[in-house]
Image (cartoon, rainbow, N blue to C red; front, side, top):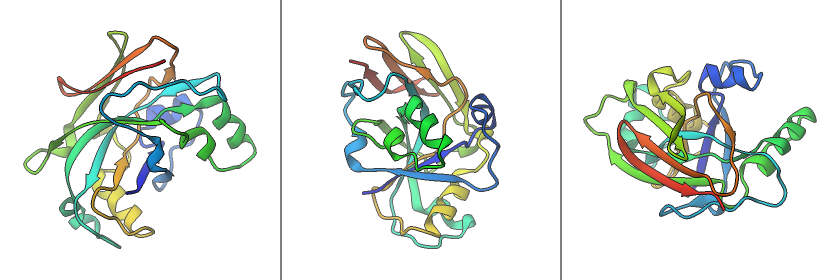
Length: 202
């Protein structure tokens, strides 16, 4: 199983971090040790003092595909869920300044909580609303309508470089509102009004 992530896929998030809006999807990956399942707690790592939450819609691949054309990409996923891309912002800033890869800031153990999935075979993917609450207050809100690159575009783009296999996950980017977490915080992620993910910070 592979975990792909898309960076800077919402223009307001790119702006809040001072990044240019990309011409093509910005892709990075996480190992399977990054996954946190079943609402397991997230333990703050000792190597960072600035871990940020980034809530994202996640699609799960259900069919092997390579060099998928965008108009056929919908045939390769039929479930959507919610995840968090935890980011060590202090480390990422340091790495970006030196032009180095982001893995240390993005791919560490436990950095990818994943929640429940729902079937989307008959669902309009262009207007999916999702949000993240921290300690009961909404801190991030997004809608798939505001994605720079659609689900189909992302699948087609990634599959041009990597063979997609059943069970692969694609975290599709975060809206604005990212911020630091601290011990004791409780994060709850929603698609529409349905609770999809819960994670306590320890």
